[in-house]
Amino acid sequence: MSDALAGLALAVYRGAGRLALPVVDLVLKARERAGKEDPARRGERRGRPGLARPEGRLVWVHAASVGETLAVMGLVERLTGRGEAVLLTTGTVTSAAVAAARLPRGARHQYVPVDLAPWIGRFLDHWRPDLAIFVESEIWPATIRALADRSIPQVVVNARVSERSARRWLRLDGLPHALFGRIALALAQSDGDAARLGSLGAPRVEAVGNLKLDGRPLEADGGELARIATAIGDRPTWIAASTHAGEELIVAAAHDRLKRRIPGFLTILAPRHPQRGDEVRALLADAGLTVASRSRGEMPGSTTDVYLADTIGEMGLIYRLAPIAFVGGSLVGRGGQNPIEPARLDVAVLHGPHVHNFADLYRELDEAGGAQSVADLDALVAALEDARRDPAGVAATAVRARAVVDRSTGALDRTMAALVPWLGEETGEDGARWVD
Image (cartoon, rainbow, N blue to C red; front, side, top):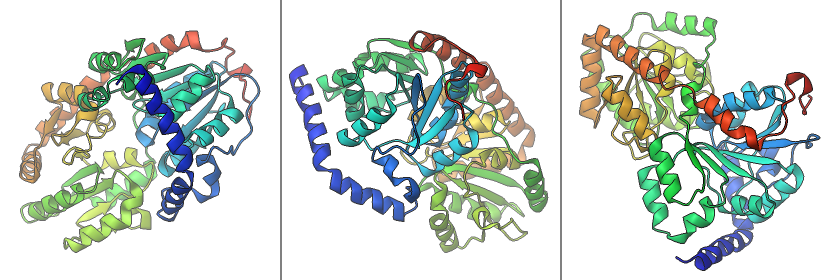
């Protein structure tokens, strides 16, 4: 694809977006009915502001969902601490809840507008950011073009591109260069990510590490932790965390096998998307399992098979309830979810073979003996049986995982150092430009 054709493709994308506005409106309304959009803030998804713009400079930070929001929170705190006003946008209801609980003074949240030229234009006309920072792999053609047209610098932090995604982009020939070439700076998680970003046309790339490795351990309410731990007692317990559709059936089958061999066996299941709670509960019930749902205020009793952790922002609590966790998105082809959170809380990690979202990190964990790959249901059951027989080995695995995470910190400092040329003069907290 020539540069001219790439430009034409982007123009067609923008034009098609305008024609698709009525269809996208219907999709958003359907998502509202499914609980995936906030009806009270529907205008924000269409680029209509829900807040006034602050005076002075403004840094726009966009994080897609919960994982990216948590990863970038330390950076938001650093930015507001030096006096920058920050607008954080996210695209999901769950990430909005995390932002509401975690954002520091000097930062506010809006839902990101859908990547359609009229809505992005409306958003940018109101907010007029001086710098746009995207987290991980957020590449949206209309947004990138609109920022470039306004000469607003674009930076990607904690940037990652899997080998599979890079191959797909490269099949489009000149198109990736037309998009990635507009990114002023890409701060990659690893050398591999940096090389792939460069091959896609990003003109300036630095490998600075993974911001998720610099995050604080997830917090938990001590009183609630004690209450649940008391309800569980000494029952043998494991966690299936951040599961996707298809994995809950595997978890249910694993539990069914193990409860016949291990008296009192308890599974704690935390779906990646808590709004799937009722769906997952029904699936588990159909499998003949007794379920207690946290979202309903239920507690695990002596006959509970599965404690369904279908609430938002409580993984710090959940990971403290068992010594070993399977991290989902990895037995189905979703690329795997973040293993850093359990590793920071001294939990041994199991994962499936599909971990391309965090390939370098999982490789390092596996090589250090800090995680174990399980290929299928049989391997998962065998690993959990081994863990039950060897609690000291599970604890040693957790220690090794924590060591991998601890020696890989420093990405936040390196990210801030790289961003300084793009930021305004530091004023400190007392001179914050955005005052609540």
